[in-house]
Amino acid sequence: MYQEFAIVATILIAVWFIIQSVMQRRRSVEFQRHAELLRIARSLARTPTAAAQEDLSYLERIRVAIREHPQGPLRYEGFPLISTSQPGTYYFPGVREARFEEARAAQSDADMLCAAVLAVRKGWIDDWRVLEQNVRNISAPYHFRTALASLPLNQITDRVVDLFAAMACHSSDLNAVKWGILISGLRLDPHQEPWIPELARHSEFTTYVCIVLQHARSVYPHATSDLLRLIPVTEGWGFFQVLNAVARDPGLAADPAISRELFVHGVANGRSAAGDVARTLVQACDVRARLKDAENDPELARALFALISALAGEGEASEQLLLQLEEGESLVTAYLRLARASEGSIELVTAMHTLGGLLDKAPPTWSRREELFEQAGRVFMTRLTRKVLADAIRNDHFRFAALQIAIEMEMSELMPAIMLDFHTRPHPVNVNAIGMLGSDEHLEELYALLLAGESRSMAAREREGEPENDGHHDLEEIARAVALHHIGKLNRPGVLETIKRYARHHTVMMRKAALTSLTHVQRWTLDAECKDLVRAGLNDADQHVRSAAQAAAQYHTMHASLNRPGSGTIPLTPGAWN
Image 1 (cartoon, rainbow, N blue to C red):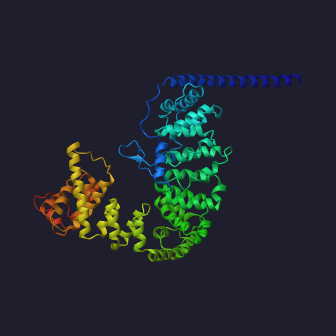
Image 2: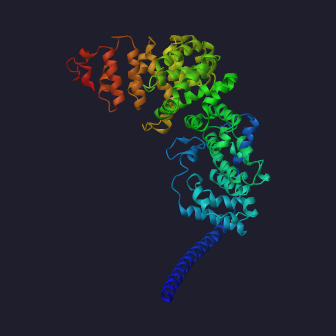
Image 3: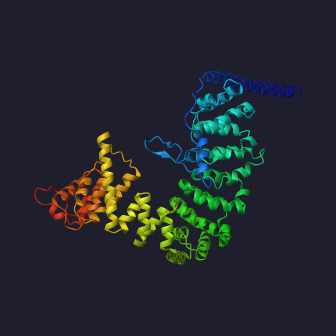
């Protein structure tokens, strides 16, 4: 008995020593880390105070934008673009937070943030501009989770809250504002109420405000209502974050009034995130219940119709989601029942147009697939009117869909609305609609657009030298290429000479458009120079240019002339051109 007791005691003593050793090692590591943070914090305090900034802070820009457009989401005309790693390309506001929030995180960055908090707490940093200099290079989208996990809440003192809040309100740096929201918001209080919701309206900051509000729900009574007030005034990836925050609470997402707000504002405000918003709405909310409510709610009905188009616009995965929902066939039946009872609108028309394509892919188990397809077609044709499409062309959200439907249905009677849109804001889509549906009078305007752009391009090349053909084109250049694609339909002097010039252009896009334009020139009228250009196109390094040249040669039955003596060896059969 004594021996057994001695063995147990020995084991317990050994375990105690092991635990003490581990704890001592942990205390040693923590002490070393604290000492390192103190060292870093002292070094931060020596950073010189920044000069008075000349740029407007983000909060000031947001307040200006709200005054100019108090209703609805923020407009970004007065805000800096957010550059990507590729020159000339930019992020949509908020996309990095939505797409990359689980990305890599560096402990050194977390330590730097913790050191900055420590320096503020110790009083070594007492100017928000000094704080900004120390945190502005710590990427919030990549590191905020690691940083917050390394930061005990007992370190967020009143001094820390006040200085980080001042940085959030006065900084013109994205990262600094984000860290200001996060750190000061960990102890949210009513004094922050005026600026926290205002910053949330910019999609770069919505993620961080949602985190703060969710964290504060247990201690801050207005956190939930503040979150819900963001639904109508956020857009794109910002709205996507609000939707995700609401969806995490099943009670909120199931509430009919809140669910209605999400559908009505979500599809309209989704914009660059429309597909992701639509997919999340279908997964988080009861679509069938809202379809029933929509029978007496035209605004909700239009939003539910727009939901179908937003889902299809996201690609194959979302299309399959719509078709594979539980009882999907009965859900589509409910949609069509609502459509038959609804007034004509662009949302309804585009939804029926989309449903026609989706029903063609419906699983064989859908016994009424053909019947539903026919119903969608009938509703589409009865609700498709000139007024519906003309109104939609003037609407930013449905402009492209309306123009595509006008082209598909060959509605040349819409040319007045299309030309007005073109004169207001030229774009490749309305240029293409003019080329497809317009008369010579309208094509002359495309020709003028092309010549004006050619003059500007020549002036730019004289100033800067020949640009690199790097595959990057702005919308204006693409619009000119689309115009060039169609001007071969203008049968008058000068047009063919312009096409010839562009067939020698330094960019692939313009060479392809010029050779394609030759397929609109009157048959058998190409001169020897045109034929030489087609021959050069057949040997172009780019496959798309070669394909356009093949189409031009075939259209003009150029096989014999291209194989005349001394003209070079050109295959006689189209199959040999591939």
